Image (cartoon, rainbow, N blue to C red; front, side):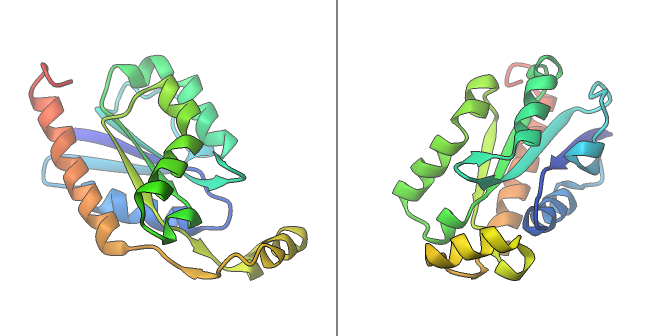
Length: 175
């Protein structure tokens, strides 16, 4: 039985929903998945065979708690398959340019530890959930509100990731 940790940072809840779907899709007859908000994630990652870390993009970067998790656990993560996922409103328009822009946002984490895969997903914006100052800024910038998450894409990525993880764990040459 393999164990996978899915851990995420979130500010307004959109990334939580994505993490839950990923965790559900990773589960299999021979895979157990633990899902934790990043602040509550276990400090000992040795019991996990693989780790998935996710965060939204805020102000052009992953949330600091997600970056710190990778930095703090870099040695343990280096020894196992790791994947990242990102939620970002930039991805509501699915273009190569937007993908490159989002990859640029996560360069610091990619430089720390290269994952086996990165899931790039559009996010959700409900300005009523934001602090007043942020809400006003979003309206001034004319940021489009709505739920842009593509659940089929998220599920497909998670199923593909499950196969990648299993392949790497079953073949030490790939790991």
